Length: 451
Image (cartoon, rainbow, N blue to C red):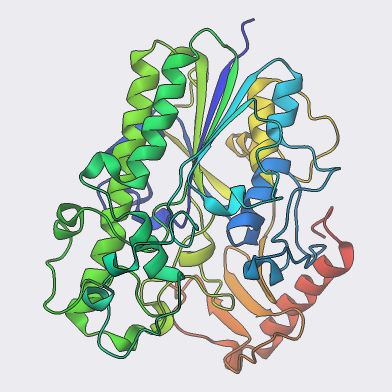
């Protein structure tokens, strides 16, 4: 039997509830079509946040929390977070397994954290294409007079720091002229070019890792305008953390900018998927799409992801798996799956045994009645962790945080409050104790078990 190809598409910071196939109101026709011909996992959750931590779990099939470490790298202040470090020598990645099995392997990404010096996330790939210019990627150092921050912030709310944040991003994209120059488009166009050039290099693994819709939320204006009109004074593509800093129309525009980024990402993912069809490779290729985590768009008065607010808007992830040999097209599978299940599921779909036991399991098993992969989900970010069942969501600091959070612990009754808006920890002390005890049993058991 001819081996199947594999295309993995990862989008950073994409909320599951913004995809049409997950019931969202944002236009995502290409991902909806992918879900219609594949399996959609309804209860998929991140295991470790943020960006680099999530990729380690996707690529190795092994949990990070609670055994993750802080191993700082020179020049990268984000490496003060647990799990934010290079691949270890004894890590075995999906790319390495498939490379050893005779696959041609390629990585296309604009996720600049992966190609910082010493990161080593391109290990196991025969070719890698780094698309420069996202966020704080030190792609350009000038001309600094080309950067004007005033259109994006209210006066006095942004502290200008040399070559950081939005200033760096604006330098990076200063020569952008049309939609094809946007980073979403450049990533997918590069991946499509690779598909065309490698029709004779089958079987293959193509891993496409896109930074968008991560902030800054900066789509072409027409993409945001379809969701809310512009507001006078600012275009808040890089919003502050507190939603109270903005009026109702400005908040609507912030959400529209994010929605526009999602639709833009979908449009160019569609370009890649259409290329797969046009080159005659779709019938021999498994395609999977997922995100590392979501983001906050005003929940609990907050914008962007937060260490201590591990509600579903931030931790639930979309995961679609389309295998042309599988007759379960359009099926939605319920039941918890987590990021560590990705590698196990993909290897099982390819019928390639893992080189050693993985922490994850084949998520397609949820199609069988009565199968439970995980009775609960555990997600960690920095000093904080969430334990989630189908009835309750509980978040606390599992070790003393660097910044005190008096609102913790958080407990949400998901049956009555699926949006996780009202913290009921103060009136459910027994439930808090029960959830906390279960979380600490996970801490004591280590990475390989969920007791």
